[in-house]
Image (tube, rainbow, N blue to C red; front, side, top):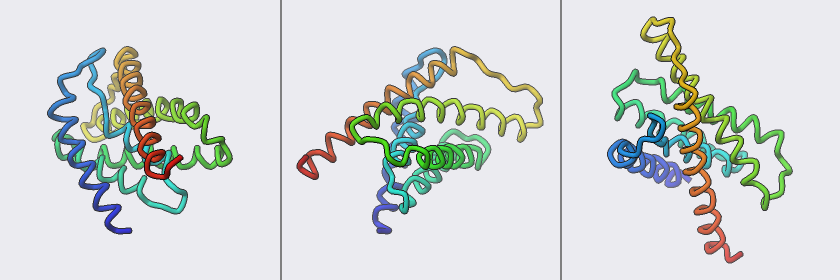
Length: 169
């Protein structure tokens, strides 16, 4: 079981390098896609209830975002943890959803999680920099939600294809 968590941390390290070096050139509505957020949401959504892989992915993704972006240490970690906890609490109410329609539940959860993440990060930056000005651009919010949903759907169906070939169904 610990090997699973080590693999998650290593995977999120390489994904964060890809996000900060390659995906930073794809700017839509003034924002870049947040692949780490989409994968944390996907991992938490598909996580078993007794497993901690969603929390490990949230902590490692937040830590790598903080380190590689040069921001205040802990802002992205806290935001990712709160998004992970939001998804966990939401899934409690969706305990018996049919697996064939799970994408219909994943897309709104990912969209709300993207908005929640942006709000928490902006709020924490305002608190840490002693600023009273919160800046929200509706086009930037819509652009980031759109990009995260596209990346999340690609990841969701990639996981479904991999699990189908792995389990034979």
